[in-house]
Image: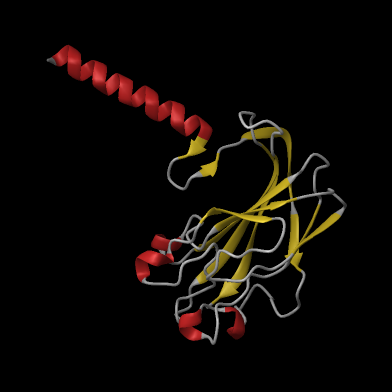
Length: 193
């Protein structure tokens, strides 16, 4: 009995370790190997209505707005030349249930790694995304009866929660079984709501 239990536990642990080497089991996003020359990305808002201090009133969720708001358009510079994919993880840093990408994780295909890249905004509370985007992990707001979608705009009802987006510049493999490489990253506050 002890030998069977030990074998079962060892097998389960081996399977779990093998799975987490390929992806992050907690949020289904790809795992990366980090480039030796990883850089800090320079990120700013491409739309002046966003200041990083206060979330614009018309860009919050539909619970407090006529419609689900949009994410901010972002300007990213200091991009490594090999980048071909950007991952955006939206979070409410004040609420554990919606941190770590709880407001959605989306990917954006980079066609040309120019000196500056503009990432367009996306609509909230929908899975219809602009060309070049894909949903990596839908937002977790469904557990709080929020409309389904790839991205949930800030939705705390004005309780002073801090919203951020984590940006990762990735070299995505051309083959399905290749490794993702983290080339650069940054975090930016999109504001308090």
